[in-house]
Amino acid sequence: AAEPAVLALPNSGGVGAGAPSGTVPVLFCFSVFARPLSVPHGAGYELLIQKFLSLYGDQIDMHRKFVVQLFAEEWGQYVDLPKGFAVSERCKVRLVPLQIQLTTLGNLTPSSTVFFCCDMQERFRPAIKYFGDIISVGQRLLQGARILGIPVIVTEQYPKGLGSTVQEIDLTGVKLVLPKTKFSMVLPEVEAALAEIPGVRSVVLFGVETHVCIQQTALELVGRGVEVHIVADATSSRSMMDRMFALERLARTGIIVTTSEAVLLQLVADKDHPKFKEIQNLIKASAPESGLLSKV
Image (tube, rainbow, N blue to C red; front, top):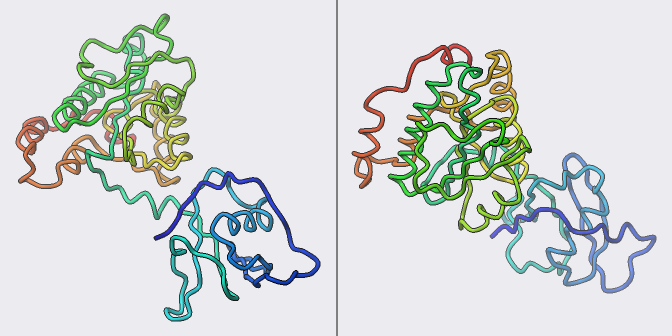
């Protein structure tokens, strides 16, 4: 099995002037580069990571996840480094970043998904375009989360000045309602709450404003290896230009821009799902086709 890891190990070692006895030559490949280096006989995964860092540390994004792969002669290609691997003979290894397009396939399951509701507050009502429509869709998403048992995290931006979450949004059963001043929802309390939920892979994100809090939250989550689905019919801004270009930018980074109905039906996945009828009742009335439609 592969052993992906966030590279957070200190730089260690380098290319020595001469290989001492008891070492094995290894070709370390990364991107378009390939550099030979001797490692001790029996070197394992951790030491290989350190050697990759010593050779390519200035080119490695330390916030990404990587897999070490070994060239297998029998297959004529690289394979994921076997668990418990130790260097015993001359070999070739490479460090492969888990690119967003490889990890973000868009699959949603209730057991690995959390909903983030961002700053749907009373003081934003007159300023945010089509705010009534995104409230309606946001409420539909929260109802779906309750039906499917999906945890919900809610934030409120400076509620002392901007008010609480609008009354139309029913917060019954949400995991956390948190005031904030930071634009991103990724706060220590939110990270702690996520850590308490086993197996979280995906966040379904909606609220306001698209180009500020939604965008910054999405980028932070992706930087932590979380797949992000932004619900286009449940997010808006004061300016439609800001909203449009934020969604375009986010989509180019591999973040999934989707709709509330697509999310809910993907979560049930099968008409024989025990909760399908309840979800079907939620979406019988289509989401509002407001001015958001032409501004995605």
